[in-house]
Length: 276
Ligand code: ARG
Image 1: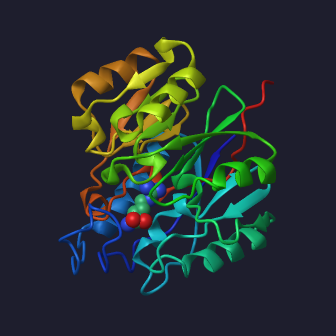
Image 2: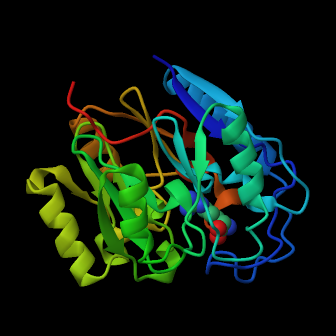
């Protein structure tokens, strides 16, 4: 079955404001290579596996609409659409809500609670658990709300390094059951929770700072391929050893705003792992 992904072309992409440390000092940057890098990402996804790409129409003045990971968390045909922390991104919510409603999803949101979708919410691929990062963008209160709306077990993980302000830049659950993680992005309590949830130490694939800063955890998995911006030899070998092919494709323009491969995509068929 194809992996269906939601994306948004970077027609209006650039750094118009700063809402994370990666954007500081880059305001006014027009990212001239963004379209080329995005096109190349698309090609790489197609080479890596069987994908079906759907696109949201880009909108002027919404440069971060390209980061469709932040649209919503999807579970089967249910979409909890993001309630963005910063006003700069709030106009994206109705655009995504419309898209999901028109494509057969039932749409809800968390009202007054900040929640940034699949940027902060990632399903384990081998356990019926949803990891939810909070602290910078998503509120701690989202943990209980998402659990009740999706009727699933949610593991809250507090993030504490501002450079890793979304969960998907610090954590990547893989379908082998391994979980890539940059542990220093999490508070000590969250690190304990993560270790306890993963259980078998073999399955925790700790990513070093050098890779984490290149957003190696912000990886897309398709059919036993991992697509990311860059990975050290050591990380590549580790991923090869558990059965993955690794594709790196330059996404430097998107790193200027604190995003990379995974943030530029949203899996349209998602949900808690169910043993079959
Ligand atoms: N500039 C965007 C922001 O700060 C980047 C979002 C990246 N998305 C993600 N899922 N990590 O919101």
